[in-house]
Amino acid sequence: MSQQSAEPDPNRWRVLPVCLAVGFITTLDVSIVNVALPSIESSLDAGPTELQLVVAGYTLAFGLALVPAGRLGDAGARRSLFIAGLVGFALMSLACGLAPTDTWLGVARLLQGVSAGILNPQVVGLIQQLFSGFERGRAFGMFGATIGVSTALGPLLGGLIIAAAGSAAGWRWVFLVNIPVVAVLLPFAWRLVPGPPPRAPGGGRRRRLDLVGLGLLGAATLGVMMPFVTTTGQGDDASRWWWLVAAAAAGLAAVLWERRYQRRTGEAVLDPQVVGLGSFRNGALLGLAYFAGFTGIFLVVTLYLQDELGYTPLQAGLVGTPFAVASGVSAWFSGRWVARWGRQLVVGGVLLVLVGVVAADAVVRLLGDDPGAVGPALAGALLIAGAGSGTVIAPNQTLTLSEVPVSRAGVAGSMLQLGQRIGSAVGISVVLSVYYGGLASGDSAAHATGRALLVTITLVALALVVGLVDLRSRRAEDRGAGRADA
Image (cartoon, rainbow, N blue to C red; front, side, top):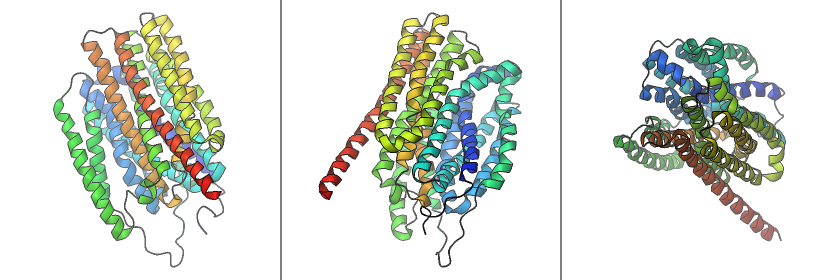
């Protein structure tokens, strides 16, 4: 009997809250530090490069760890990696909170990102493993709501912590708050997360680990992300773009190696059972473009409100709260709607996000000189975007992984999340470059923010185009299948 047809795990609905909590804290740490950057800068005398490492280093390490961790999880180490990742995340959060220098903090953030990258493929793999059919759509709907809400709530929670602990020490508690959360989660994870299924008699050898393929894919990922995570947004060092040449070389070598390894063993990391699926390829591309636009919104809005309009971290965080609320509500229902509407639901959600970001751009350009009016108006625009976002992330994940075999769930989920992390790194870099470049050229803060928001509009529009192309191809396939049946 296959995993798909076996009796469902009776603990699956108790494992899910643990998975959701892990997804929440690891995603939260992408955005919660945004409001803490001014405090870190003054407390540790950190420069732009060090601050960029604090923000983007986490994303870089997160992305690099995803595929190896997903492959190891699929090979039977999911429970062990889940526990180890939780412990590592807590220890590195402690190291961040106690950091005496900006260098210490940067290194700790890299290692914290590695821990997050180890954890997240196990979360996706567990959902794919423990749930099927309608239940899987509901579970991924909850997961998507968690991701969307945590991203949007990061600035608000960071602002609350800094307001409570003070600007001098508050940034430390932004990291230290993870420790009691992990302390609560760890015993539940130890008890509930299932180990590898027992091997049937005569079930064959254990799956091999393609170390060369993992290394080449990691090198290609590093080359793609480095030019974007090493920019401070203020000026440009042309030499960093050579990383993309290295990425292309590593990527070509990875493809050639994987083809050879697949012919020889049938166990390549870039599994043709996964990358050969149109639903997976199109969904991963949509996720990359969407996260490139989605993540940059909060960074540029937070910078504008705090640095230029004098908002406190808490006030800046409150502006994003409507996005979080609307995203959570719509994501909750999207788990039920995705089975009926499919890719149409995702396309409609991206379109609504696009409307919200265009509205935010208009608010900044028209009301940019009025601090009292900008905040509420931006909150309204982000409410619209949040309602759309909740019907994008989880449904896209459900549809993208819908045809992936359960035995490949971890590596497929990690490849999907890798695209999201690369998209986030690219989006943040371009948005920062446009924002600071505008200020350096003498633009007003409102005009520079508007130009940066145009970048997010373009990237979200690109995601919409990908979704429309996929929707059209799906309809063509359905018509072809209908004629064949007739």
